[in-house]
Image (cartoon, rainbow, N blue to C red; front, top):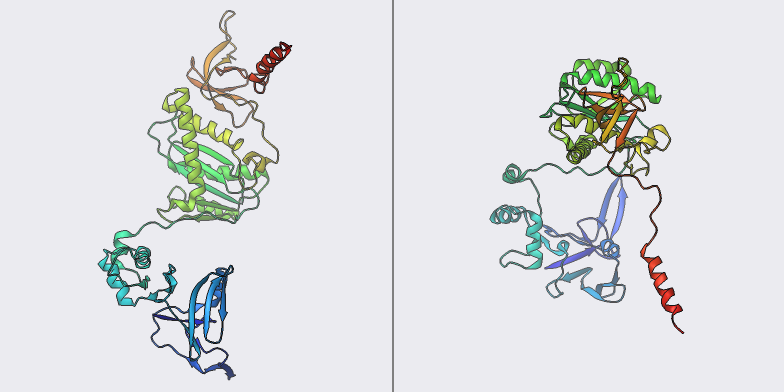
Length: 425
């Protein structure tokens, strides 16, 4: 098997320094070249050898490819005006590009003989000599195999985006409706609408009784958030569900000039930002409920509390800042955070209390108020959720106000050394 070396990316083996190109009437004529008819293998490119940090030398009667430290890898001889390499006399080479290319019939035949094996494995067998009887050829997938497509087809991979499309908050909002939950919340909700800002990853959650109310919630949210942040919403991205793809929502978005984009059917990866956020919120809420040993109908309060804390604690890798700081341009304070599900006492603010009636009720801390600086507490006596600042919480673990000493064993060690050295006469 011989291979011709060429210097340009054409399937012609040109004689060195003996070819001429004439441009006449926009036509190119190449004279004195050797045309290899029916060439079934790739010609070797000198540029590719140089890209691999190899050195290529041509002499009057021979050529060679070697490393920069002088180790010779390939040797060729000159025949007429061509430099050829006989790989049968060379040591085994592992590059598949040096193997002759199999014909179309050979590709299909061996693919079927090997039980429709993928071509990468077939080429590995041909290169390494792990089997006998398989020709030393380079097998390529020249066309789709209908049987493989029907029997092996799988979902396409979705790589992470390197470049970001947004430069400020509210340019792109990702939305998804999670549910229905098997257990209703204490307020009768079964769905949670999750909205994620693409720029900051700031997240909003809204709880619904049924998916029919998603359009009204989205319209109200867009109006409120634009006024609150003084920024326009430009694009929203959702799936193809009827909860998002309806006439009411489309007419509102058209009236305010907001673009509505959709992910492909049964392809949640295209809406992966909010899908991953759904998983993060649900896992955090499940963990909080497990630790606090609260009933499952507190799941909505756990999700809302997890969303509130994650907006102020997770770090957006793109800017190394929290979502709260990217939206409101100031670092968040988390000094008021408390353990979800801890025991607490809330002041009874009723006016008709008796002189000797208890002034406080036992409760359970279930989150933070969205519209006021207060805590949300489930009152065990009234079985209602109240928002109040007059709450005393018992987290079970007191925060130590004095820092622990560094390496506490060092002081006793130093004391022991001093005592022993002072005892030496």
